Image 1 (tube, rainbow, N blue to C red):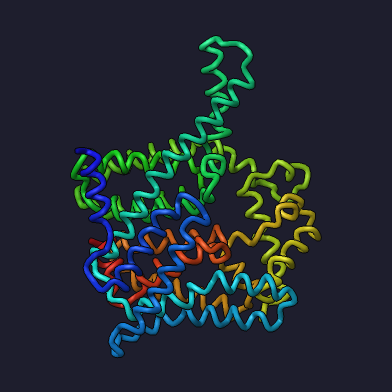
Image 2 (spheres, rainbow, N blue to C red):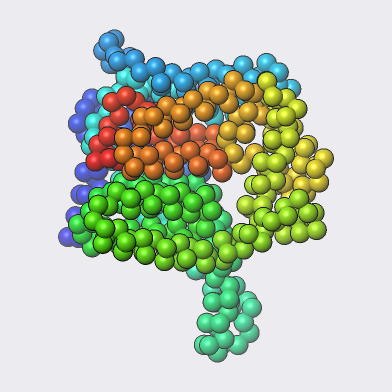
Length: 425
């Protein structure tokens, strides 16, 4: 009986209210959003299906539609990237990136014709939440299995206390950061969690299940140990606390906030952050660099390259190769060996397309900030997306590109149901 109820609830989450083409478009999006936290390649076929049926919606829709010029910034960005091929030597890499970026051209145009309603957009968050919960328990299972195998290999005795001691000593190797989220990068999963939290934290918790879900999401965020996510969460929390009018409740929440900050700062990866990034130019300590330190080095090398080619950049296909060569020149060995990108989408775009592409990408976020300044909670959603692009080159991987090309246009529309009804509620 309970299983039938669960199946019924999940079935009711799908889109059923319109023409089969529109229905397939939305349901493919929902499945893609569910699969995003579970694997990099899993949601790709469903997003492709969604694009194909979205194009069908364009031909099915009435010829009259409301032109939202802000959405045309995305096709413009795609065109600028295409022009970046004109001064690219590695055309193969450039064409592959353009192929992955097609959703930046197509989804914003599709959303000019698709009339989304509050219920259909809300389901995007529901499916993303469901995917996060499933991925959390999948990661718990794999991390526990690895930890148990590690303890058994390291511990020759069967003494209980010795086993527990080894488990406590080794948990940070399997339950923290990238080791805990191996199928999808921990920074990407953190972004998904923050966007879901931005919706649920705005509303009152009305059931035990909602409370349990919030606890799981915070625990998941803690274990992922993303510095960018911690920074965004701190800003979001302060914005929400400032909205509380009752002084007594506000002071109580401030105390809870500072206790939470202390808890998150005690994460093993975060507590070592300062020691890892200070004196980041020194090669003696660079071999043991943590990801945050490598990110700072990526930014440093990218800025040096931008100074050398401030107008047109290095081409859509050549930017990464030039950056890797710069790592070698600057003796950034870990970055060079791992062939890291810029770890900042604004710098990555500048390297690819020069100042024109950079201004276009920045314009999208300036408009987004203006549209979402109506409430602190809406603005916190803007911060999630903006700060995420400061710490990651999201428009390099398909999962990041398609997520950006769906969520940001829905937020940017003048009569955005996603922002006004779902997030601001």
